[in-house]
Length: 429
Image (cartoon, rainbow, N blue to C red; front, side, top):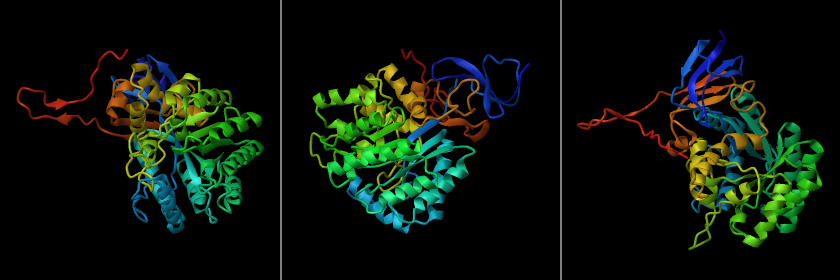
């Protein structure tokens, strides 16, 4: 008879199978029917969804929870948000950025979000944000995997010290090379920045994740340059293009050429639906574009696509709760991914697909993998998308890090049940 540290009993996995999960020493030791096993703690997940942890491959933790400082983004545009952040980062202290980021990580853990890739601004000669986020990465390491991207927010060439500071940030231990080619002064400078940033990554053996074509301009085509440089430098599988909103406005003929190039280069795509549809189309009257990139078309080409959160309560976005199911729910609607198979895929986009993009090791519900998982008050992955339910239990690296009581509504209606739960089991195909 096996003995485990933790035994999660009777959970429904995202693929619909029902299994017990035995956890020992921070790893998943066994899965299946573990009836008769002993455990230091038993978690009854019978009828509940047990998922691998949620993963966010695109975030800005140095800015999070700063909404309203120094003032609110009145126009709601990307450019005003960048200008506001330029003021805020001069005022912010290292300690204040650390405090905000740690508070956000608390939110994330409570929602079962246990891996985040955060871009950190390198257009600041003090590199306060880099110093702060390196502290946060170390502090949350026991329970949350935080990757950092060296992100020259004001342009690798456009900002006079961005190049030197980006290299300094990488020397300090930042993980990934970032950039923003569409924010350079010219298209030629944007293409040149893609080339040099990819060369830096190749020389250092690092991953690349560029803010790429985050614009309504259909002629912003830096993703084409990124695909070329990725292949030229042998970076296949190590590169992501975030946002890619210009693809929403490109003509179909050009996109029919572009998608195979992205697939050949094995570039992953990270749309951020909450933010993309909020910031894009601000110059339009009607029809009004919403700016989400071509998710289903990329997936049809075999391109890895994951949903990112991007912002929570910062100069660009006033809302957010660290819930990746909110992100997938919005993406599902805007991308019109409403068939059962497509909805199921939206769930994997905030779990397994995002884990691939972040190159996470030991991820997933399988024996030998890291014992990180979430028990949700839902019966299936699709129902989780519909409800965005309570996270009843979150386990990170073999330890329970968050619990939440099931919270059914209490009714006082004559002839009706005394409580109601919005779970609803039907055939989902």
